Length: 229
Figure 1 (cartoon, rainbow, N blue to C red):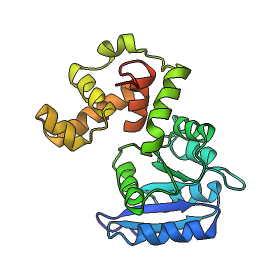
Figure 2: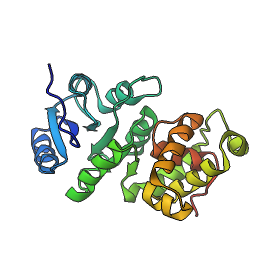
Figure 3: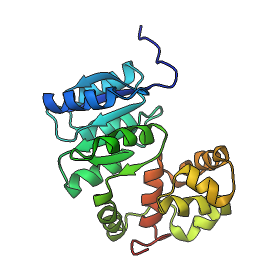
Figure 4: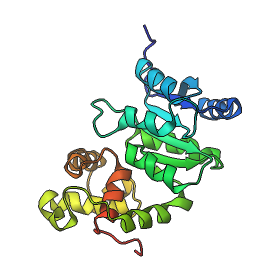
């Protein structure tokens, strides 16, 4: 039987086929008092198995690995048909659109490059575990522009957004698209953070998405906000 998680400590699985990268991420993440690396594995299949058996809160996933790659593993962990999703933070050396969009479409909640600062990595792990999306700042505008150009709209289009969402949910979605945190949104709207979380919990299923990041992509993709600001 697995040991229960320590209260307040996030359980992290690391998946990367390079031993030095696994060791580096394990040391970096494990040094934080609120984070615990419960497994460090070399391929996507092992990542899925470890995440499920060890009740991981977050999986830090590389993309190109032997056997089951990171995108396939992400789809198994948090794809649209997964009943009990495990959040995935993709951390890769590959700044390639095909991989980036594949990871987001598979359900990943965040995407960082491996040259990110250590503080950015540990902050991203916490953010993804909390249900917040995160995206490397250098990639954000390109991602949104590409999503808009593809026009791969969700079944409910922007014209129906005001019917689909309550006015308050629409306010929150637009503030999410500005990059605001729950605390920021609560201050702007003069609401409790718990109220913002409740609105998000109801809003995400309406959009057919599972994370804040995917909700922001939906907003840009469907024309609610523009990449030019």
